[in-house]
Length: 124
Image (cartoon, rainbow, N blue to C red):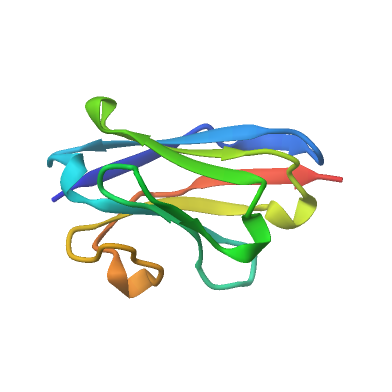
């Protein structure tokens, strides 16, 4: 079982930047496609972006394109989410996830390992 732990969340102001990290352990992380989801208050978990096993391909949900960047360092077993120009509507719990069987997973069901979540709150 791949274990994932997010860090780096917090309270920021609109327009600020923030970087989340997701530390992986227990398995060889380069065997997994990885992604980020978020769940805003009262809403379902929503895909925001993913990255291929070797990090050569990234893909994003439209609302975060140009503001969020996903990267990974397989040598450090870490996934990152760099967020710039944050907006109040970005307020959510952010989850990292890993898929052992899909190449470019975008749905909750396509991932089989999850972190516990990191809270990001953006004030106006």
